[in-house]
Image 1: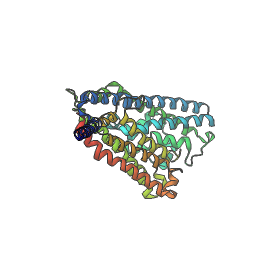
Image 2: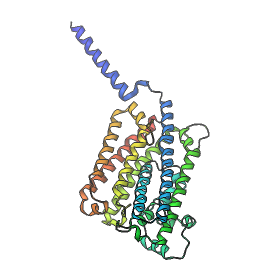
Image 3: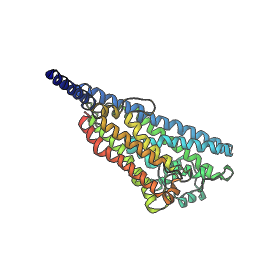
Image 4: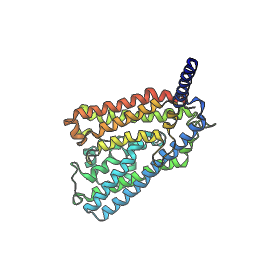
Length: 357
């Protein structure tokens, strides 16, 4: 009877051990090469390329709406442009969690999303006799990036205090708005074409012979994790911290539309979308690799991500006001986003260096 008792005990321990290995150590059951290849294929197509296709489509919708506003300048058409601006911002801000490849190398990012808007420079442009067309916008050098892209469009649609009416739009402002929308569409098309025309395949085939962009799958995974951690750093220690430390609402990202907190939130949402391989449709992502080998790390990433999102949502007034009146909530948001970044940098990156073969 005693022997039977010990036999049952050892069988129980063995079952627990097998279960633990299957959950956390995989026990050799996953074809890691096949899984990693599938993750990179889905990240390239379902997330990166899909996001830029969406960006291009929404840029086209915004351009159409701006043309309509210029033809029929009323508040309904102005509000339609505002709604579409917010819609394309959602896509763009999520995509900043995978800000690598052509959008970085071809300097799309600074040409599309530099802030704050320099009122003096903008007013000088509007007061000039220059022809305000897309060629003019494209000719601006990097010192004048804040004169093109999302934020001068935002300023023209909302006005400095956010309450602009259609009747306040001047002829020159409408000309400039149209030129900006045309250039935004051109840049969105450029990055979409780069990804769908070949760059997505480079990421999807990382580690194959002749792929100098991604000589190994591990390099590709490292770049993805660096982008995820990088947007945490930009949001917490740039977008939030700079105006917070300076106590200067003029430094915030999207002040005219009062969209900054939404921007920050979409930045962090994007991290989970690329982690799970799920922007346009659900696919394989880094989540699947982590869950195959380390469930506790997967849980930590998701918990800290959810906590960061919750901290941002706890800021219930516009960001320019929050840095002055809700400083505890703003500091908490920075702390929680940095906590997520630490996990990505110190745990997820070493993990992909080990398993991203």
